[in-house]
Picture 1 (cartoon, rainbow, N blue to C red):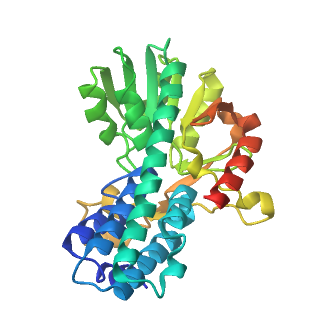
Picture 2 (picture 1 turned 30 degrees about the vertical axis):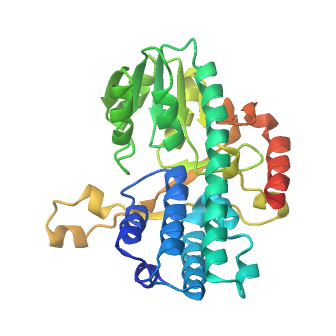
Length: 319
C-alpha cells in the first residue's frame, strides 16, 4: 500500500499522528516509534472494527513504516518487529484476545524502552558533569531529554540546522531547563564550537563498527570536532543497532529529500521549476570521528562497540 492507501485505513486521531510522521512535523526516531505504537493501539481499540480488520490494519501500518522510515532507521524497524511479533498466531483468535495481545506488546516495549532511556540519560548526564559549554546538533528526542536533565545551568550552542529545521525544537527545552542558550546559523558552527568543551548528537541508526547514520550536517560537525580536538558524543539507545552489514547486506544509502519547500517556499513557480532542489536527508559518520556512544549499556568507545552490538542483536531475537 502507498501512503494515501494506508492513511485511508486510519481514524481521525491516528491520521494526525500519521501525517506528523510522514511530513516530518515531528522529528526523532524515538518519537516516531512511540507514535507508530499509538497508531496501532488506536486501531486495536477502535470498536467499529472487528478482530480480523484490526489484524489487517495493524499489519498494513507495520508494513508501510517498515518499508519507509524503517529502512533508514533500524530502531524503527526493530521496534515495529517487536510490536507485531506473534500476530500470525492470532488468525483464529477471538476479537478480545487480538486487541489485548497488540496492546500488551506495545506497552511492554514502551516500559522497557523507558527503563533503558533512564539509564542512558544518567550516563550522559554523568559524562557532562564537568562540562560548562556544549553544542547539540539536529533534533533528537534523546538529546532533548539529556539537555532537560543536565541539572545545573550550562551554556548551550544550538546550530539552526536549516536544512531540516532540526535545531529549533531543542530551544524550548534548553530555555525551560534554565540554560544559557545560543541559537546560531549552522554556518557559524566552527566559531561557536571553539568555545565548547564537547558536542552531542543523536542517531538514526548505528552499525556494529561504530558508524553512525544521522541527518545532514552531522558529518560537518564531526569533522570540525576532530579538527579542533573537541570530543563528539552520540547518545543512542541500543535498539538503533543495525547488524545487517556484518552479514554482507548493503549498507544504508543516503535518504533522498526534496529541499524545495524549505529553501524556496516563497519563490515564484517559474523560478522553482528551473532549479533542482533534490538532496539527501541522512548520511554516515565514520567511527573515527566519534569519541563514544552513550547507551543504556554504558559509555562505549566507537572502536569497542562491536561486541555490545552483536550481543544486543542476539537479545532482540529472543524477546
